[in-house]
Structure formats: C-alpha cells, structure tokens
Image 1 (cartoon, rainbow, N blue to C red):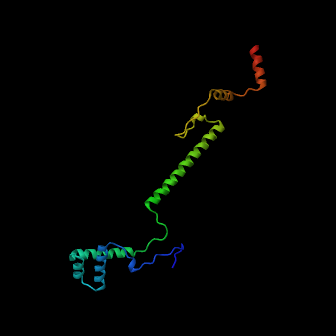
Image 2 (cartoon, rainbow, N blue to C red):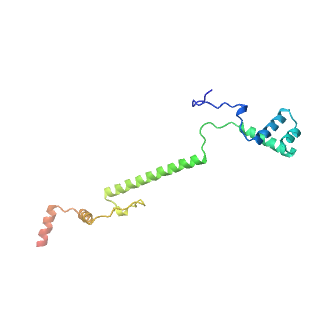
Image 3 (cartoon, rainbow, N blue to C red):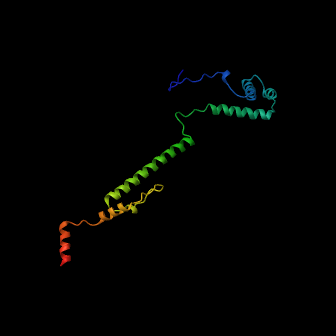
Length: 161
C-alpha cells in the first residue's frame, strides 16, 4: 500500500490511538454509550461527570469525528506564511529589475548625449563617483563644438585683418 509519491502510509490501528489518559477515558465512555453498552448516566458516573457535562463532551466528540472525516483538499495548500514568502520573493525580484532598468535608462541617456547625466535620477543608496579635475577638463574640451582646420584658418585670417 504505497502512495503516488512512493511513501508508505502509516498503518493505523486501535493500538496506535494516542492521547492523554483522561481523554482516552472520556472517549471510551462516549463510545460505550454510542455502541449501546452503557447508558449516558452510567458513562457519566464512570467518567466522574455530570449529565450536562457528559452530553456537552459527547456533542464535541461527534463534531470532532465529523470534522475529521471531511474530505481533504488535494495538493499543496497555500498558507499565509507561504503566500507572504512568495510575495516577498517577487518584491525582491521586481526591485532588482527596476534597478537594472534604471541603470539601462541612465546609460542610454548618457550614450545619446541628449540629457546631462546629472539630470537623470540616480538610485538612492549608491555612492556617486566624483569627477577628477583632469576628467572635468577633458569633458569641457569634448563638449566644445568641433572646428575643422579650414574654419580655424578662416577665423584666423579674418581676425588679422
């Protein structure tokens, strides 16, 4: 007798029923009444209970029996903890993806030259690299309009005149 996963189901017998001594005594009293072996008065007296308390316990025992026999849902059941773990994992994944997309947008803006890099919103928590004076000078030279050799000769000739 194996399950689909190949694990054996535990063999359940009357000897494997567990519980405290008082719970077993009450279960015996309720089962004797239901089987017709004893009357509710005798079972209550044997368990040391009043009739009202015996009937309350009998109703609770029968409700437990019915609840235990409800069909169980198949497959893995989602709990609040598993749902929270899945949402947390998804949140972290989306945060990484947003950071990646922001980096790609910044790189595209810098590469296109349309937007100054300082105008692009930076991801918080990361240190910004400080420009060195040499790099600042190089950027200033690179941002100047390109002047061809003929234009340079033409401007020099007009200035001398």
